[in-house]
Image (spheres, one colour):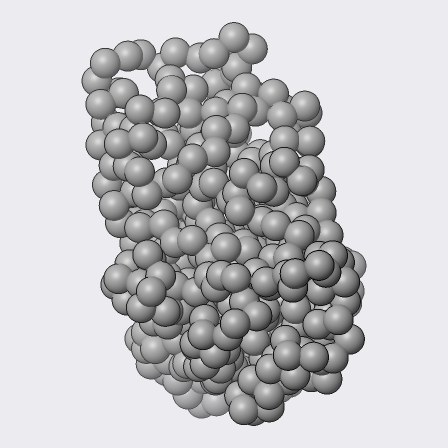
Amino acid sequence: AAAASPAPRLCFPQRRERGMAQSAAPEAGGEATGIDAKRRKLIAESDDIATLAIHGGDQHDPGHGAIFPPIVTATTFVQPNLGEGGRFCYSRVSNPTRHAYETALEALEGGSFCTATASGMAATALVLELLSPHSHVLVMRGVYGGTHRLFEKVRRQSMGLDFTYLDLNDVEGVRNSIRHNTRMIWVETPTNPLLELVDIPALVAGVRAAEAERKKTEADVLAPGMTPCLFSDRILICADNTFATAWNQRPLRLGVDIVMLSSSKFIGGHSDMTGGALITADDALAERLNFLKSSVGAIASPFEAYLALRGLKSLAVRMERQCANAQKVAEFLEHHAGIAEVHYPGLPSSRFFELCRRQMRTGGAVVTARLKVREGEAEVDTMRRFFSRLRYWVLAESLGGVESMINHSATMSHGSMSKEERAQVGVHDTTLRLSVGLEDAADLLRDLKHGLEG
């Protein structure tokens, strides 16, 4: 009888079971291996973010016992013999440095799978590959301008996707907006830049109820031009957790299917790397995302993964200081005569304050404010006068670094949107997004006061 065909060899490392440490790779010295495996098993039992940020995932170095995973730049890996693959085979598929970072991030978010991408936008583009052409997506109103650009100016044309923007806190409105071809809910909480929150448990409950009702009342009807996909019977909920990070909230534990991160921000934390990530605890989604990331290839490089993992180690201590500073900045700006409005969910005056207390650890490390224009002064002159008088705050794109940065939303984060589109979501020419850093809070407040009162 002919011998049975061997099982296909996987070209990526096996993921550890949720809550279990991955078994140690063979190393010289059995006693050291046993100690290392036991140590990592104990660490895997911790659920504290500060501990997971440092020790989470599979970060051991089986070759030399390095205390920090080394940068492995190899494109390919030697195979012992035909059909006898090692743990890694090709770096687009898997890489030791990226693997250490991905497993750390998945542990932090409470998932079982993570794929690190070349940027946050690459992660957003990749998750849309889960959908069939002509699918319908519900989107939180007021999302990041780059997300809006990808949805409206790329995927609407290239995939025929249809997007509806609404307040996802209106659960009844969400249920009424779900169509037979609705395949995804895109959650951004807090939103960029107005820091609106979404009640994730309430949204999840409403969507799951609508999903069950849809299955009862109709067959799997496809819109014209649609083709079946693996998740045609599901409504996937994806949460952009960039602003909050797992330190503030863990959306997977609140019921969402996928978490998206721009790790260029608070994960890296030092304004020196670009990256993104997708994390899930769903086995079917993990398998499909693993296939898609290898097929599309928009993966994080070993060097970017190394920088992100290095930054991740200090996430908890950075977020604690930055969020505390942000609270003081928000309170200062709320009572300053030169400010027209302040957006920060950690303020008791915010309509999201009670939700923030239930769902997040703090109000976050970002504050958004709108400058008040002086009588007879043009808006642009108000802005330039303010920026010219700052010493520590810098005018720059992005956020989440150790330094305090101010983003001019109309020309930076939301520059791809028209003035009318920006006005619809409340972003004006004098709207500023402040990413609060690690500096002494008193110095930051003095600097803002000097800029506002000049």
